[in-house]
Amino acid sequence: MVLTDAKTLPEDPIDSAHSLPLIPLPAHVRPAEGHLLLPSLEVEGDPATVALMREDLRRLAGTAGPEAAHAAGNVVLALTDDASTGPEGYILDTRDDGIRITARDSAGLYYGTRTLLQLLRRTDEGWSVPRILIEDAPRFAYRGVMLDVARHFFSVSEVKAYIDRAVALKFNHLHLHLTDDQGWRIQIDAWPLLTERASAGDAGEGPGGFFTKDDYRHIVEYAADRHMTVVPEIDLPGHTHAVGVAYPDLVEEPWITDQLVAEAERLAQPVPVHGEHFSGWAVGHSSLRIGEERTYDFVKDVLDEVAAMTPGPYLHIGGDECLGTSPADFAVFMTRATHLVGETGKTPIAWHEAGAVHDIAEGTVGQYWGSVVPQGSHAEEATRFVTGGGGLILSPSDRTYLDMKPDAEFPLGLDWAGIVPLRTAYDWDPADVVAGVAESAILGVEAPLWTETVESLEDADALVFPRLTAHAETAWSPREGADRTWESYLSRLTALAPALRTSGIDVTLPADEG
Ligand code: TNX
Image 1 (cartoon, helix red, strand yellow):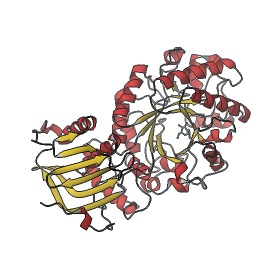
Image 2 (cartoon, helix red, strand yellow):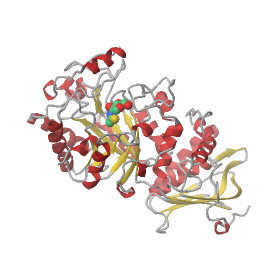
Image 3 (cartoon, rainbow, N blue to C red):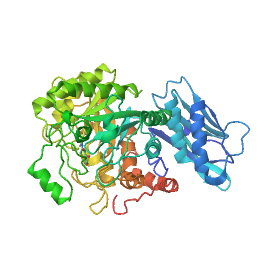
Image 4 (cartoon, helix red, strand yellow):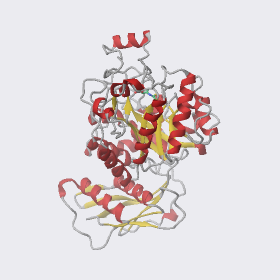
């Protein structure tokens, strides 16, 4: 077996990666002839990445037990100063005697190993990997998933399992939606009743729950080991009904409209009652008391404590769907709250509605959740974050909301932003959403999972896969390229599906699409 010299391969072979189980598509793939067969794998190099890779290989090898030690490392993970790979980028090269991954940073090495894990196959004679040269780096620095642990609570081990799914697809941010009308999920020492009184129950019949500070730190650490940054969200000043269960004087009476009542009746759900747990799905009925100074004591304490246990640079303060807060009050609140975040040393993130407010802190990052073709004032609001020196995270709801039903009959999920089949999830580009926002102002892409209808990891998997793989490709892969097509993606997904199924994720491929 002689490794074909990469230089003799065509520059950009058509359909080169088409049949390979690679998602997200790497920036450059040069397949060669044949496969490399290695009886055993011994990983050496950058110690932290080696340890994670050994663990992953043991899992992949199944019950076969630990590998017989190979005399010398035949999977080499090397940090280099070679400028040819950018941040988080790597080069993966299969050679006669093994596999070499090089990168400038350990995140790059880690992503190289994620790619290798997709390519490796266990055979009777050992491990098989296609002869290949890959040079790769992400398109966007922010590649996020969001998990709503407020509507239904997820345990530390479930969150870790969600992280495992996301990092395998090279996502690097986990946005935790920690608070909402139905529950407060994070311990705050200065306001202990939040978790004592407002964490029981959820958007349904479940028990709820919350993360202690140690739980949260454990999640942050587990994520960080895998090059993932946790972005905590405290949703303010709306979505705060649960705050009123703990401290009734901090929130207004619920803002009940005829529409809310009609919708609650249609779904046989309760209408919110001030100071009592709310288990329905209605949004936009709660608001902190904007005119009270005690509100800002509360907000400051919460933001300070959350910032202190968050090593990442961001603190998300929500700002969405504040239907029960007047625009003037909303402006007062978002201005003060974004500045309070700034005082903690973190960069504020807010949902795009906050872009309507003139004086939010400079550098505030916006998260756009409008449709892929912006309606009303949404584009203008999104643009405001960019002119204000911040960036934009794109989460168009009719493309990236993982809680939207993939087909009308799907038992889980909602449909207010539309039905989102796999092809719809795949076919859009972040640079085309908000006209006038340059690619360089787009921090990246995030796929949120709201959990009104999601009660378990199994439910989450059913909604999330395979669509999360589409969003991984949108966030990581270059826009142009012979393989950056729906057809190639579907063929690569088909090739990847058996490995996903082996790892316990049951992906249904769209037989009728494509
Ligand atoms: C909208 S869009 C929400 C959430 C809901 C979700 C359900 C946005 C920032 N907020 O409060 O859970 O719809 O799909």
